[in-house]
Image (cartoon, rainbow, N blue to C red):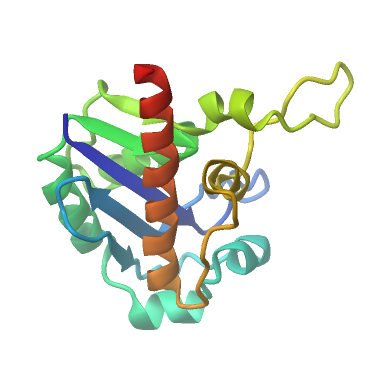
Length: 188
């Protein structure tokens, strides 16, 4: 089984109900399990898009940085899909969100998206391992963040970088670490 681990960073976390604007990919990071290192691409946003301030702080990517360092979405997506064609499993931490971004980008570009099978989410199963109390009526456990899941698996926080491309690679490394932990637990 060949897995492609991936992550997206977007201009916002949710649809903007006032403008109807959907999140747009600003960084795409991936790591084909058989490749020596992860890859990452910043995406040029263009005149109609800008980073939401909350997303900019969270991802460390400004509109200016994306537009000066980024490549067209078609180029970044093409590089990503060239690796995706070699995989039969697609692992992401919050797969529901990230797969929606991949599917939306494919529709926008008029190209094929990832197959509907072999899609794996690491966030939901990590809930039972991390067991972080939910602060809501009825209790239970909340979905962990990637930082919380990685810390549970490794015992210390994941590395971070102020460079948006390097940080994308570090995030995909963390996704792979958590996903492989889950696969080992399932096999045991």
